Length: 434
Ligand SMILES: NC(=O)c1ccc[n+]([C@@H]2O[C@H](COP(=O)([O-])OP(=O)(O)OC[C@H]3O[C@@H](n4cnc5c(N)ncnc54)[C@H](O)[C@@H]3O)[C@@H](O)[C@H]2O)c1
Image 1 (cartoon, rainbow, N blue to C red):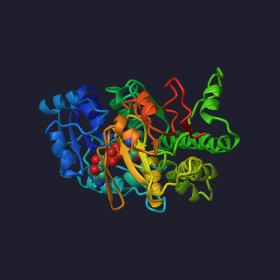
Image 2 (image 1 turned 30 degrees about the horizontal axis):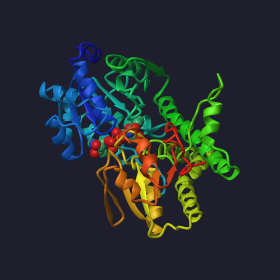
Image 3 (image 1 turned 120 degrees about the vertical axis):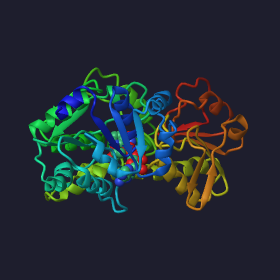
């Protein structure tokens, strides 16, 4: 039976490497589609959780995970030798930055090394991790072609970026359109057929490099637009105009405008990192991608702007940050997700800690938080907690927060997300980012 036949009749074995925010939902989806799935993961805790049918990613339906595990359709392991059993391998490992903002693709390199020991004829290997254009061909193809297989004849290599938006109630892995770029036309045909089994819309592009570039471009687009809004927020603050109102007003235009809202900065594993992958690669071509660097500078400056404005707000009430209780509302990087990575809230808290503020926080998704030497315990949001702080600082607009109660009980509110907009009545004590 050919690989294409196995893909079409769902008898192919699918390996998903890296069972995180991207890999776990993808593995469950493939198991639901009918494939036998082997999840290969570095961290034993995650492997144990999966094999017990215990969910640790909010975008995954716990009952579905449990069902595919109990049905032995999905099993997790730390054993990379299991790659030998796989017909299709989807690589979903992290692609962070080094301290100096250079791409760290060591996880991809490590997986590729394992693959070079296990690769066999009639195998499809797809990189899903976000990375700079050229990675699939330079790293994966470059290593695996030495194993004597013929790419496009008995080995198929492709890039297909994961576009999932964690916490998005409408778009999950199965209904988010997917790009595919194969090293050869045959690779493209195989990868396209594979994803067509489980995902609603597949868009082929001419090469892995185009797919890699498109994914990074999508995130640069967001980073730059957010930075534009954030820069104008700082201007609007000086001019006494609300940028939230301006964006809402501009969004009434019937065409040619897409709203992005101000905030305390950007977070997560994508927007603060991915653009720098491209900025780094562009230097190889003698080019400095100024939009990327500028957007990064503005977005990374927002936590400083928030803290400076909070200082001014308190100063006008004859208070200072030192020794003052600030209640942080929301510490994850965006609303309704549990992911704390690169959260601007953490940066704001670090800056406030340095100024000697007494920090207390509440977040329905995070029960404890370590900042330097200090371990903070999340508090239940109650009227007493709100009444006991000098200022409630809204950094993440989780929908579980009771904003009526927050406005009623907090003596002062600095709302960086315009989360209190639907609360009616007098709100003189609520101050927006601008
Ligand atoms: N989180 C998102 O919203 C999102 C969206 C689109 C794309 N992406 C991209 O997808 C990739 C994965 O992101 P994520 O958010 O799922 O990361 P994650 O950290 O949640 O998951 C990655 C998993 O891989 C495991 N891992 C690390 N090195 C490994 C190795 N060598 N072998 C096996 N397992 C290994 C980690 O333990 C972790 O469980 C990144 O490139 C990211 O940029 C993420």
